[in-house]
Image (cartoon, rainbow, N blue to C red; front, side):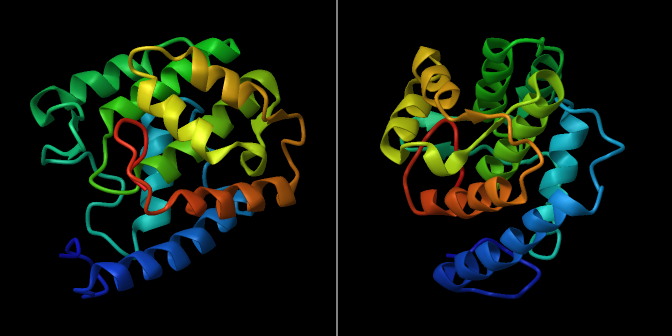
Length: 201
């Protein structure tokens, strides 16, 4: 069954295809149009704005905190009744060092604030924090898929692995359109893989 959507698509495979096509185009637009200039990097408002921009043509819930409990495999994300306080706690986390930024990213992924599309939105959000605080971004095209998935699976218990994986992929090419575009393309390479805590891909 496909999620209820504005495109009136009932086939989940077709919905995934259209979701990828539309949200990839919107993600590339974000690099150039200044849409996020008025949001503070690391804030939930910025994450919600990213999510809304990527998915507003597809879902009514774009940019809105989910109202249903969700799980991946055996892992349950933050229950709805605690979700708002979890988001607020993550927002207050420090972000002045690489370790602090990744810890914040991991915790927001555990909160999983949206019904769908958390991973794609959170990776853009992460890069914008890294850009602001460290003048660095992740070159996602150099991240090993299997290492990343396993590291994110274990990140709520031990985040040292995901820190290592992401640190190896840092680049100072923060305004390089090609690095950003490859990152967007690579983001969709994760589609279809079951990953519990970090991604909703």
